[in-house]
Length: 119
Image 1: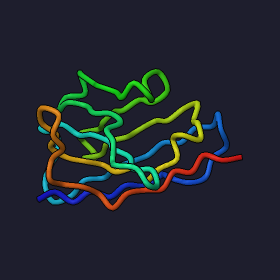
Image 2 (image 1 turned 45 degrees about the vertical axis):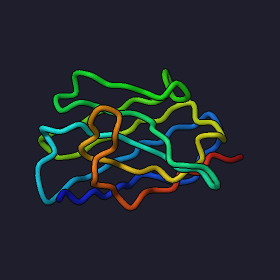
Image 3 (image 1 turned 135 degrees about the vertical axis):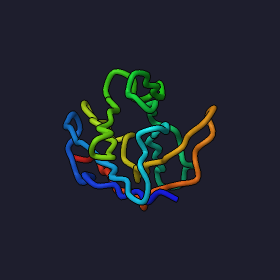
C-alpha cells in the first residue's frame, strides 16, 4: 500500500495561485496513474485531474480545464497540481489518489489539504 501526503494548501484571494504537492512513500508510483480529487463542504468528493504514469496524458474536470495543471516527477515520487485563476468555487479539501483506473479511484488516499479561496 502506498502512503500519500498532500501539502501546499492555504488561503488565497480570488485570481491567485497555489501549487499542491503529493508525496508518495511505501512503494514507487512511477508506473501508476495519479489523480487529484476535491471535496467541498456539503458536497461529494469530485474528480479534478489525473496523469498517467509517464506524464504524457492528462485529463481534467471541465470546471478546472485551462486553469489547473497536473504534473508528476517520478524521480521524486511526487505529483503536483498547479492551480491558477482560483475562484471561490475551488474552495475544498484536495485529496491525492493513487491507482485510478477506468474512472474509478484507486484505494490509496492522502489525508487532504485545505484550499480556501476568499477575499
